Image (cartoon, rainbow, N blue to C red):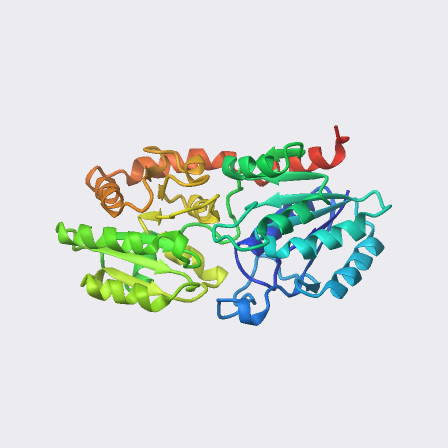
Length: 378
């Protein structure tokens, strides 16, 4: 097949760009694949981060053409003409925000018209964690142009079926991110980061309110109060929330020595350093559909402590590859961290992670895309 991916892609940054790079590399084993990305993904005034461009190297140096403008309807028409000129058999959109619904939906509608091209949406979310007016309308508009869907958790599957009961789809778990290399020696990683603590937790990724970092900070405070003074929390990621309140809370709890903020986007080549330094990755989310952070953790053979929200418990197997705890409950979260260390669970969980992650394969995702895009609609 001739396949065209329209979404965030290198030289733009972030987990979705990484996903699309890996997807394209696996699809290219059997298909002709091209990618088109944004020249303007978000209006600057609405973008909470410091930059939309990748600062590190990707495993592929090939940058996608930057053609799409998320807010310019005239641009959507021009991009649709370019897509028609390329005449793909399949267009793949990676969908995570209804904000992109008008752009994706219009391009898909115009590109498909009379062409025989099929459209597939890979859905991170159907509706976002932080709801806004227009979310349902924009999503319906985009999805009406789709022939089929891939969902990556049962939570997203339920949302899709609720909006589109007759949707043709497959549920395929989010594959493990392989883009950041292999684990390095834990003590070497800690030495490079200047970490002397013997117990190291990692919170990783863009920091938003719904990700629950404040709950984890409270849990760390409780552990310190209980005598666990050799603990360090690495909170690594760019703030998309008010950074001051996090620093203030750490000061109020008098745990500055136990919490280190790395409040920047981490270049790809440095991601492995932080994961390798940690004993366990903590996802204290207040809400979620899924999280690519768990798949990064699995790539580095790291156990995960996560809250029982969205699809996190579908990836983290309770008491086997980590612990599942209630959301917004710092006491329970603290107890699970204390248990992880008291019962020396790391070696057991790491072995289980190595077995469990085998089912999160890119080949399985590619096969699902092939089946959906080549089988006739019912």
